[in-house]
Image (tube, rainbow, N blue to C red; front, side, top):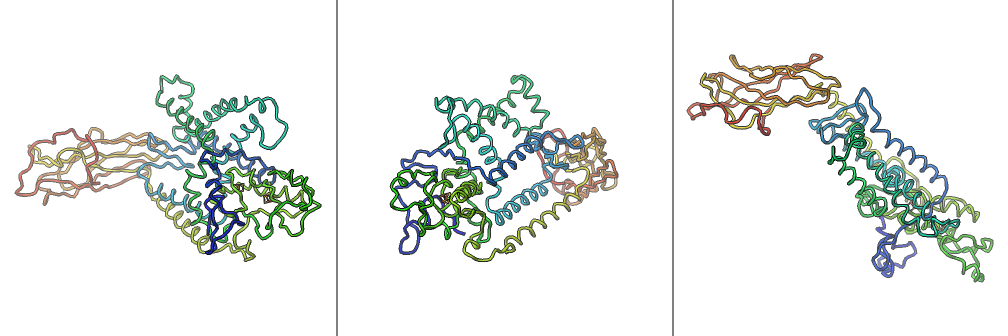
Amino acid sequence: MTIVSSNLVPTTAPRDASGSATLDESKSVLSTLNDDGSRRWIHPRPSPGRFLSARRWVAYGLIALFVALPLIHVDGRPLVLLDIVYRRFYLFGSTFYPTDTLLLGLMLLGVFITIFWLTALLGRVWCGWGCPQTVYMEFVYRPIERFFQGTPGRAGKGWLQTSGAGKVLKYPVYAAISLALAHTFLAYFVGWERLQHWVFGSPLEHSAGFIVVMLVTAGMMFDFAYFREQVCLVACPYGRMQSVLLDRQSMIIRYDERRGEPRGKKVAKASPAADATSAPGDISLPIAQAAKDRGDCIDCHMCVVTCPTGIDIRNGLQMECIGCAQCIDACDTVMDKIGRPRGLIRYATEATMRGEKFRLWRPRTVLYPVVLGVIATAFVLVLAGTGIADITVLRGQGRPFAVTPEGEVENNVRVKIVNRLPEPATYTLGLDGPAGARLATEKASVHVGPGEMVTTPAQIFVPAGAVKDGKAGVFITITGPDGFAKRVPFGFLGPVAGVQTPAQPPATAPGDGAAGGAE
Ligand code: SF4
Ligand code: SF4
């Protein structure tokens, strides 16, 4: 599928010998760029209609959900918490730890495939209807801006708008909302309880938290007060992937070129007065004088002035289009006024626009759900195989082994226990190895809190005679509540016959330092 990379190439643009559109160099390259390279600020005029109403309800619902999710707890655990500091992820009743790399990877893959599938079916429906960037920009920040500065092209401006004071006064309101938004956002990462402590405590008590909140607030301000639609145009990679994610049967927002062209004002040439009033957005023309040889598009630019990314949908599918459907509402209103059927701009596929049949089932719309099914099955199987605890046995730092004066070979280990239960649990360590082998640890029974991880050092002693070719078969055993039992193999190392060996204990204390290796 071909996507025009900017609004430079109208369908009516001149073509070269090969049929490619030629660019008008006098026009800007990007919809948000002026000829001199400065930024063209977009102040879209809202177009009331069925899609705007529906999107507004969806947006408010999503904002409410976004705020509520970190506050909801189930069985004493947050419904959603991505606790990076303590390396725990709570998602809808399940707790994931760094050891769940496979589960997290499957989940991420599932999210990507779902987005690909949705895009193949409905184009950038996520961008226009669900993305927080669009939701907050179009339904929170822009309405505030219109309140303080007025709506472009609309009358009824008061002192706030005409004096210019609104241009300044909107910023404190932006800042307050950005601060609230930053707190909501951070609640997903630090938890509501910790956030409350940050909010009600002195910044001196938690300077790191205070700095994080301020930085996120500044980021929100930068995004919604300055960067705005540029996030969708230049920063978000999703828009750039459209050409590979869409096909001719994807339902996207399109201008019906066959019906709309040749575009033009619906006035007779002999009406200079009407031509003089033909400013963009003005449809109050003597429609009765419509020229019969024209298409339905009256070139009123209502679809352009309402576009939050500043593009002209009549130029074809463009990378900048976020699928917000504002141009549909705008054009439907125009069609109602000139007595033409709605839908000059509508949700449609490239195929149906060309009179071909719509095909829901095609390779990509079948393949994506199949892959999703495989991922979901794998996820459930892996999740079901996860016990109540994760056990990892790591080699202690320092010399790999030591021979004691008593003639035993000693290895240091660290046993890491992650308790996945929602309540505290006690796990008991043991050893399964050659005759005479023993495990020495300060705490044979380890108490681990709910969702917590405890690392305990231990030493394994094996009679020198049981070590063959520098190795011995040793297993660490761990038992816990609900019949939990696990036997983890450990690569026990010892001296090789004929090779000089250390005759003193390891230089470092057991359990010090980083991971040494085997389980
Ligand atoms: S709003 Fe409709 S009629 Fe007006 S310019 Fe856009 S496509 Fe043409
Ligand atoms: S072209 Fe239409 S659907 Fe696309 S961003 Fe602009 S107004 Fe929204």
